[in-house]
Image 1 (tube, rainbow, N blue to C red):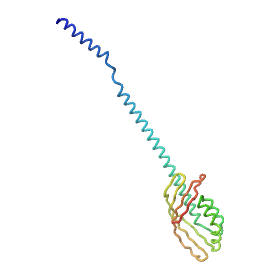
Image 2: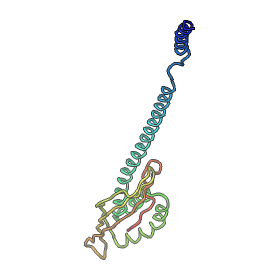
Image 3: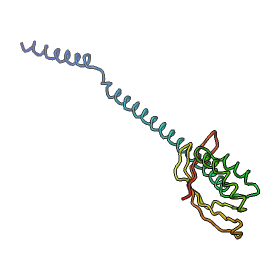
Length: 187
């Protein structure tokens, strides 16, 4: 029996060891798949974040460009609006109406005839200069601007120039590629 036992033990050891090597599964691939899935998720998240940042940059850049263009248009328009020469009042009114839109255009057009006669009768002259200006708020198609304007005014009753200092809030709207004043309010 001992001999059999000795003979069987090594045989059992060999068969057990052989079964373990032959029957054992290959190294687990699950960690590799998990790592690939995590890497893919990180890549997608990174690309999404970059796309969002790119879109946001474009939006901010568009708003900055709109602000700059609208501010320049508002400065030019404010100078034109506050500078009047009675020898060319009709030309001045036409330019003011051309640079306006919406409610402000309608209001100015309606009051222009009365204002024209008052200016001519009093031989009123004014010269406006934008001293300072800033953008209050902006989108790509609408910009609110604040302007500080010095306006030298003369007329029959006051031939010596009187200086008026005005604060003006102006809303500029992009209409067919042009920045037009849709609201003008003295502050």
